[in-house]
Length: 59
Image 1 (cartoon, rainbow, N blue to C red):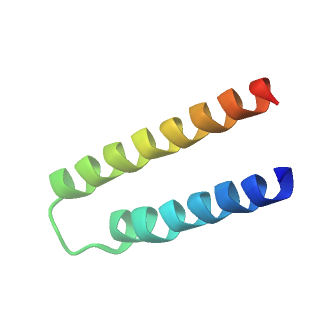
Image 2: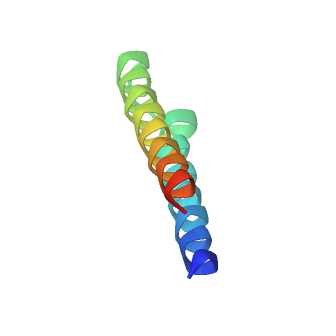
C-alpha cells in the first residue's frame, strides 16, 4: 500500500512539473501571466508536499 501511495505522489509531482513548469518556461504570454502561473504551480507543490508529510506522519 505504501508503494502505491509513493507512486501516486511521484506521478502527481511529475504531472505538476510537466504541465505547470512547461507553460511558465515556454509560454508566449506576458511576464505577468508567467508569474501568476508560477505562483499557482508553487502553491500546488506546497499543497502536495504538505499532504505527503501529513500522510508520512500518520503512517
